[in-house]
Length: 133
Image (tube, rainbow, N blue to C red; front, top):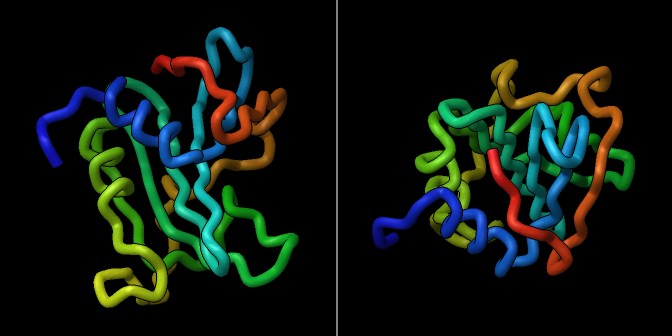
């Protein structure tokens, strides 16, 4: 990937039709999450601040699987927003040779506790305005 800013990487999420979740006040959220749902898994990004972000891939075999409280993940990454966005945007497509397939215990950073999820504003793919950290 070329050298891109966080704003450009967030634009790429929207272009790829990720759904954004703003937890807390939509004008000043305490967390921003993004989800891309594949057929049998979801890629999740959690932005906590200017220096703290997490991404992971979680299996979603059942409709009631909670992507924000995974019991297992097949990949996870924790770094600053720029590197975490780069990582999640370059992860292999599920089913392809370069896709992760391990079963891992999720780090505590790979979760959003239920008590932090209200209020929430959901912006479906293609309808998102420019998010800021």
